[in-house]
Length: 312
View 1 (cartoon, one colour):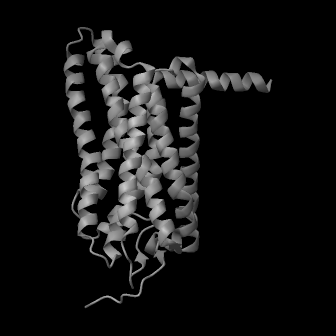
View 2 (view 1 turned 90 degrees about the vertical axis):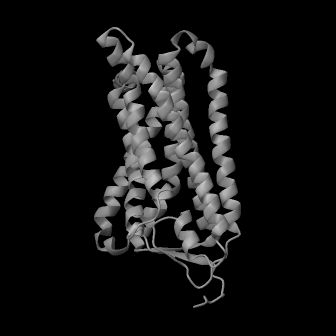
């Protein structure tokens, strides 16, 4: 059956679908999680900037990770909350594709920053004598600029080709934000190239950085096992454990949504996983680093003491 070729100018986002009767409790829960995520990530950036003890490559990369989370959630969550209250809503095609572009940039950049953090841990543990030479501020800045440049470039490529797609009689997106899979699904254009391009970009920004992280940690683990003292091994591993937890959570959800083949009820599954990396992961990352990192905890305590002294 051929589709009606009348072009549509806006999409209808269904939001959470059958869960709309719980929209008020969900709105409160999601808003609370969003505020906590923004606050904790802003706090991480502020601590790294203010405290000289945190002026090291690991915390510099961590601040970039928090910046990615802030940009990502600020782009998606306010609109998602509005859709929850309204039980769905309309959005123009141009705005929809722009929203995807603004979420793709920090998503791709975050994948690369996580890989950069693993390289930093590799140099610190496997080549400690050369650490200050290799991880200079100039090199840190070059790495971060490269991550953002690649994220911006790949997202721009996807944006350009998404803009070329046409949408006819089908304009309903069963999701709470504009993502490539639902857009490709309802397009009346030939989407084979777009699917191929999405697979290539997803294959580049998810598996390859993840493989790089795995390889670096193999070398890190070998180096840790060679440390003679138990205390030294625990200290070396503790500097990596937080990063490993974040990597597993972040790459796990991204791989399920963008890499693995679609399954039955994949729309609802993707919605749940999307909520995980939109609301939970941005809050989870700074909490993991702050709870498991003595330097961050010490910086928070110093900041709280300074605030208490100023109030007196």
